[in-house]
Amino acid sequence: MEVKIGVRSVHREIIVETDLSADEVEQELRNSLAADRGVFSITDNKGKRVVVPVAALGFVEIGEDESRVVGFGGTL
Image (tube, rainbow, N blue to C red; front, side):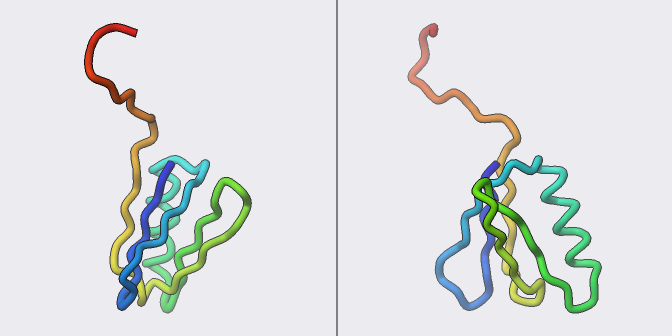
């Protein structure tokens, strides 16, 4: 699952590949936003943790749970 995090006043987004489902990422985000002066924390596939203060969040884009097949038509 790919998660893109936009941070205020930063021109590049943070991209994290995680094993969490879209629902799990959303729930973690909701919990972070509910906490006073909270932080949004997510761990990538390699075990590295990204932590962003919720006050600095610009956006969080959650990818799809399933990967799509991209092609030019025809049968496989």
